[in-house]
Length: 111
Image (cartoon, rainbow, N blue to C red; front, side):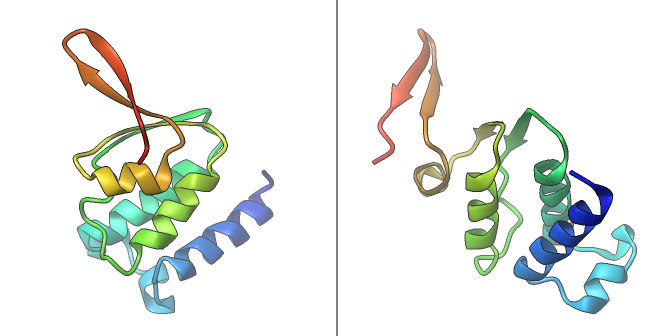
């Protein structure tokens, strides 16, 4: 993806993720944990990554931004490996769900 397209897409996702104009120009150190999480998720999704590994990806996010983040992750073209205790997140976001158990991987129904 070209830098110009990536910058435009990053701006669009930031606005959808409830970032104000002021929040988008502040230094990272001034951001909340939730804002930092959203920024990093946007960078990962827009990067040329074939796989993203996430541990509790929605833990620090506000309920208002969850649908935006879930939609962004659904549209991600690479492999997405998530560790989460939030079953609803898996059902709403993931196509295939596996549970790690003592015997290995156990495929779970998304419903």
